[in-house]
Amino acid sequence: MDEGGMPLLPDSLIYQIFLSLGPADVLAAGLVCRQWQAVSRDEFLWREQFYRYYQVARDVPRHPAATSWYEEFRRLYDMVPCVEVQTLKEHTDQVLHLSFSHSGYQFASCSKDCTVKIWNNDLTISLLHSADMRPYNWSYTQFSQFNQDDSLLLASGVFLGPHNSSSGEIAVISLDSFALLSRVRNKPYDVFGCWLTETSLISGNLHRIGDITSCSVLWLNNAFQDVESENVNVVKRLFKIQNLNASTIRTVMVADCSRFDSPDLLLDAGDQAGLPCRVFDLGGDSEEEVPDPGLHTSGSGRVKEGLRRMLDNVLDGHAQITDCALETKVAELLAQGHTKPPECSDANTRNKYLIFTTGCLTYSPHQIGIKQILPHQMTTAGPVLGEGRGSDAFFDALDHVIDVHGHIIGMGLSPDNRYLYVNSRAWPPGSVVADPMQPPPIAEEIDLLVFDLKTMREVKRALRAHRAYTPNDECFFIFLDVSRDFVASGAEDRHGYIWDRHYNICLAKLRHEDVVNSVAFSPQEQELLLTASDDATIKAWRSPRTVRVLQAPRPRPRPFFSWFASHRR
Image (cartoon, rainbow, N blue to C red; front, side, top):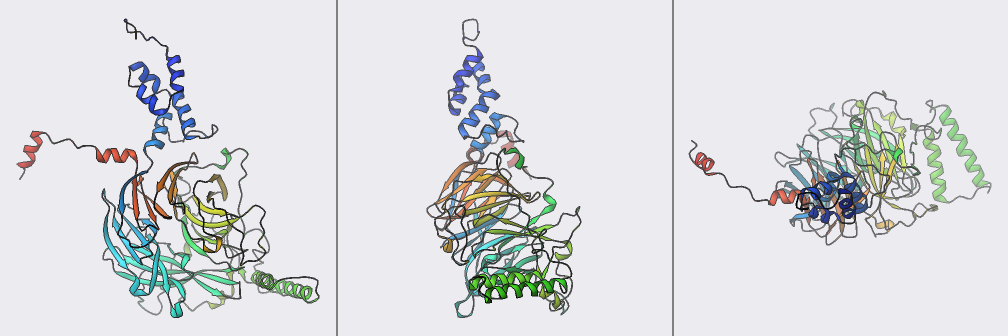
């Protein structure tokens, strides 16, 4: 400034100088005087700082909820949970899974030490209860989920049966008394199980048909297994689905379609020019997938004719086919006459989707199956178990199938349930599965894919930063979680990762001493994230902004209020 108080440099020149500075230097320079302060908050300046610092593509627009470029820069810099504030060491073995209650006041953890631990989520996290599942012949606990009103906890694990055969089991625990209310068998154990309503949960069972052919039955179970009379259901069959080429149904979850019309963040596939978006919609268009409704007559005739032609070709030497391929073809032909088409529903009714991993080429889970659950299917009311056995002759057709062309190792839903995020390790381009027992090798890079369950389209570019190293036959689940603005995942490279959902950029790497198996955002406070690791610890991470607020010295009460408080009676 000159002696008359006029600026020596015009704003345009200061702006050009500030463009060459980093964000911290711009903020520091803004403290010099009022003129520099005004220039340091310029919107165009912070737009350049944002794209340059975060390396976001210039064609990506600003977050629709952002009020300014400065505030948007500050959000990504200051409000991401990347500061470690607490390490929980109460588990004695690998921690496999974390889940928050819907209120955010509690969370649960599962571990190879065969306990389910329930924690109080306060400024300082404390252990509330520990349930040891070893007395029930469990080997370890692997998954948990709170019901909608946070009164019950579903916990699933590996159950050791006769002759050391491993299956799964689901336990329901009361969060009032911590009493074990019921136990439900679950096969295979990595079906995990999930809540459909506040008092009913979904489990699985597997029935072998041939060497590489089976069927998965999904059951709806009452959380309270107190049978009042022989005419009251505590379990009811939900769906029966054919499995080919050694595949099975695993990792079931439920999406509530009623939330789709009010998305937390609209991820529009149309804003990515030149990016091909896969559309997935199998199960409703082909004659093979949905047979003629008169399946006892014309359907049965087509199956017999198809089997006869295929066997004639094999016996005459016109077709060379392996035993596995022959079994698969026979199973496919038989299913054509014994598969019920998807039930039609009112277009105005928002039902629920059952989502799970599956496959059609190999035992490696490379597809995601989606099956609509209609209102009449959401209760155990109806014919008691054992009636209506004629329906056992039919398989249920899927409504939609996503093929990710790789090994699926994680899935998670956005809070509005509209977007499905999938961790996948890709197969090599152009790979062909010749033997269902020998799937293609998988990439060490993990792709985080995003699918819109309302439009049935793939949206956004794949997020990639995390890695995994175990081969296909040893691959395990890495749980991810999604908040309003962020998505987080574990990895085998000893880190957890956080990305921004809108900008598709990695914002933080969270260090552990071993594989990070699970992450969980607080549903009420996305600036709090938990990570669980094979190093037997759970770490709590908060945003820099939250840490500053919590560590700021609290002002002492004034003498008047101190006096007033001491004399209250």
